[in-house]
Image (cartoon, rainbow, N blue to C red):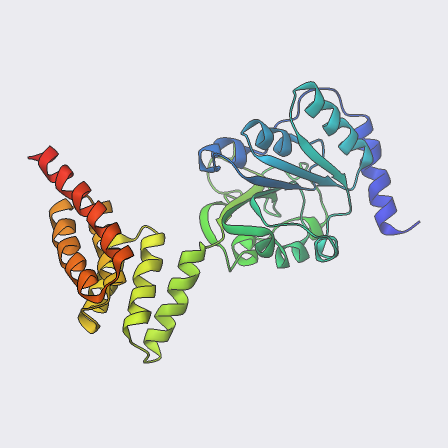
Length: 310
């Protein structure tokens, strides 16, 4: 009997003997559910009885759950049906190779709890959409109660290891309390992290800033950098680069339009109006009718906002 079959048999036996109680999600997911998107897709890896998957589906996410145990998946499907939740529940040995060979679109949320396969972290970033969130919680070596969780070091995290395993993701929350302080308080025996993949806009920002550092500086680069900052809602940084673009080419109507939108979204309507007036003249002189039309619409909106505030 191979190792995979032994693991499957072990978990089938354990999950077959589990009660019918509705399974709970891991604490880091439940306690920070306000971070979840209002809609999107979610993946629960090594889902077990499906506490995370059921919770994600209850939160309105289109959820997929994977586990090696047929018994676990069967129980999850029954709970989902009982509570009128739509979950795609799949039997599979969830390791690095599984996701290399399986075709999945990236997910907005991924959860993993009470499971550790260090090789899995090599593929997790690729499984996340831009801005996607990873919720990971599992057992540590430095346990307050040595009888809880697995005993093999293979399945136990070193101190701060979750941070080391997610270097390309941005940490949003991290706990690794170990056996420090009052052992009856706080998350003990486990460590958890919420990590986020950078946005597409932030990826572009880093690329464009790298080009600037290498000596490239032109109106198109400044305009692109300003737009990327705008998409990332960093309006003040966007303004700096869009102003530079208008200095480099005062007749670049697209830069004036983007600059006006930054001031508008910052609710500096007087400044927005000034920029739009300048941009409309530039666009009209160039014959850029579309830009002229769009800026005229926002100029009217800016003036209405100014009148409302007066």
